[in-house]
Image (cartoon, rainbow over all chains, first blue to last red; front, side):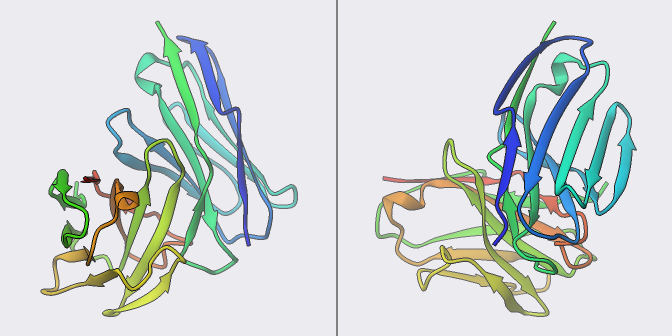
Length: 110
Length: 115
């Protein structure tokens, strides 16, 4: 059974700072998901990755399969990046059921 | 861009009543999911649905819950006799392939309040 731990739980930074959010999981996976939950509650999928690195705009996600660890980076952070960022992995390899981390609440101050 | 839609956005019901939460997944997607998030807690998987049947379900998804795809476009979650602890945000999601290894697209959620 996969457990997912994120750090930090809360992160406050100034506009423009480089942000890193970490995710560790306990068993082998086929893919890892990074999600963004807006203050209103809606969830948006940011990345799904199974190896290496993916980039979308100012967001970069990396994964180290051997270390069972992934990071989400935000470059040149902006107040509109303020949200909860959630990491999720399949419960067991090959499963559809996702297990979610507790989320990292990010606040970017102007 | 296609999106997953959910109705209603907020549902208030009395304990013991039946509720049906509705979702319209992205039209060419084949895999459908329901999740819930109790206020202040993690998102939790409830059930996945493929080829007109449940493919996986969690321990939460007991006999009080059921899912249906009644007409090829809607995907519904029914709670037969609501309890106070069913109060949560319910999210529907869909994916074109197995969502464990494919991007899942989430709806905006239905906030269910059981009084």
